[in-house]
Each structure stands twice: as C-alpha cells, then as structure tokens.
Length: 109
Length: 117
Image 1 (tube, rainbow over the protein chains, first blue to last red):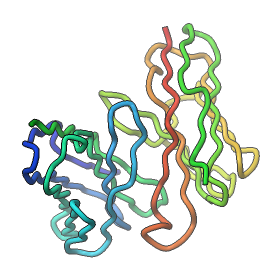
Image 2: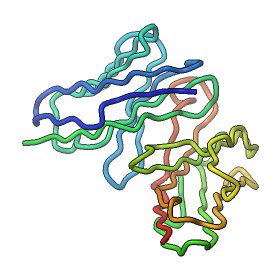
Image 3: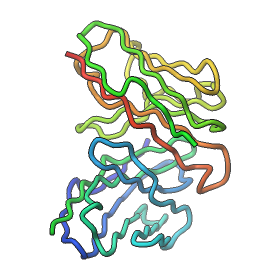
C-alpha cells in the first residue's frame, strides 16, 4: 500500500514564494507527480520527478529526495490564479498514479 | 486534439437507480483509468485498463460497481444500484505508453458529477 501526506491548506500572499511539501511511503517507486486542480475542474499535470534533485519549469519547481520519501513543489511570484488544490501523486510498480488528498492553496492580495 | 471526453457532466439520480458513466479516451492512449474524488477521501483509483483489458480493479468499492472497455475508444463505469454514499466526481483519464515523462503523464477528463438522493 501507499501513504501520501501533504498539508490540507496553505495561504500565501500574491508575489510571494510558497513551498508545498509531500511525504510518501510506497512499496515501489517509479516517479512522483504534481498536479494542479482548480475548483470544479479536472487535475492538470504540473511536474514529474524520478531522480533526486530539483526540476524547474518557469515559476514552478519540484524537488525529490527518494531516500527521505519527500518532495516539495515550489511556486514563485505567486499570482491570484495560482489559488487551487495541488495534488502530490506517486507511481509505484503499477501503472496508475496514487494521489494524496491535496493541498488547497489560497493566494491573497 | 480532443482531450478525454466524459458524459454526462452532471447527473442527479434517486437511490436504487442504475447509473452509467461514459468515457472516450485520447486517441492512441493505451491506458484508461477511472478515479473517484470526494472531499473526505480525495482522488481514489477505482480501476484501470491497458489495451482494453482490466489490469487492477482492487479500488472498485463493491459489486455494485462495474467497468467495461469494449474497444479502444470507449469505456463505461456502471453503478447498480446506486446509493447516496456514491455521490462524488468520477474522473476518467488516459495515458500513452512510453518513457517518462509523457509515458507516465495521466490526462484527465472534466469529470462526471454524480449526486444520488
């Protein structure tokens, strides 16, 4: 089985930087994904890590430490449109993704 | 290219009725997934198919739920009989076969919002 933990809610100010953490325990590991989900919409792919280290993609970066079972998503220069739920997901030995419950991020003016 | 297409988008039904949710995956994708999302439990995997064959249905909550994929472009998720606790958003998603990242990226449909009263 898998256990994926992330904070339930976070609040940050427009223009600031926020880090959303995710810890996981899994019997196999073939990658960690971050998805963004706006209210009432489908999850959309943000980032993917399979090796340790930082992957940067514009304002968003994702970090992975496999030995610690830990990842974070870093959002820079926050914008109001970044208010959404951020889902951490792990791919184990199967082909499906197993998702955490998500972190609801509120960006305030 | 069209994304994953689901129908109906919204359904309200009475307890005991049969519910059928439909999905058309992205053309050429080898994997199809059915997920369910609720506030309490988050996004849960129900079942997934590879080349129309069910691979893992361990997430299907009970015998009232069934899923089929008769061909590469169509899948159904059926609940019979439906119960109020089945109220949730049901997402269909698909993924191509290949190396990361594209081979592992799952693309979601807009979801079917089910309310059982």
